[in-house]
Length: 258
Image: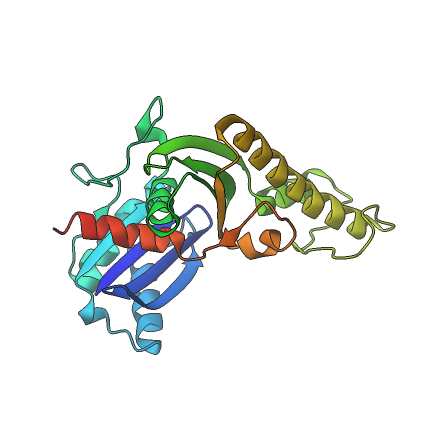
């Protein structure tokens, strides 16, 4: 079985595939203080709880946008699974994507594996919107090439900044205000409206501008933890896919295991 690891700035997602079947996936905070033992003890316990045996894992592939977590994750794979993990950024890894950027090395691993899985699943051309710590809009051409993108602050990051910078503004959850008036009559209602509908405006505005530049035939696929919440409130997102990054990692592993 294959263990795939997606290490983001907020969470690390672990998943196990048996060929093309997802056997289980688990999420924990990235947390700069966590050691390889912290990750390993927790992961092997939750795997066994879901009837996935650590000893059945035969390979590991990792996407990471947090360089200081690479060594703890490598060490965890060695110590707990007796496996040398392969990282998307390792020399010699063939990801199978033509990156049309001034410096391809600056594109995050997660954005590249999203492009791979999105093109394999949906074809192209398309825009992949990933709701993570940052919200990214990535363009994949009809032939699967990565054509660049847009990076905006993630909504949780924006809300945290608003709360921390304004002494009188409370911390609020990310929620769809539904049928409530856009103009709020309380501080919380005003914040909820501004954050949610403001973010919908950002999504719709950027997708409209990208399509104006690249062509209206672009499909729009969303992934990430808040993808469904926002997709339900706008027509510009055609489909959500929560496993996109994980399938992209599996695809890279297959490509490099031939």
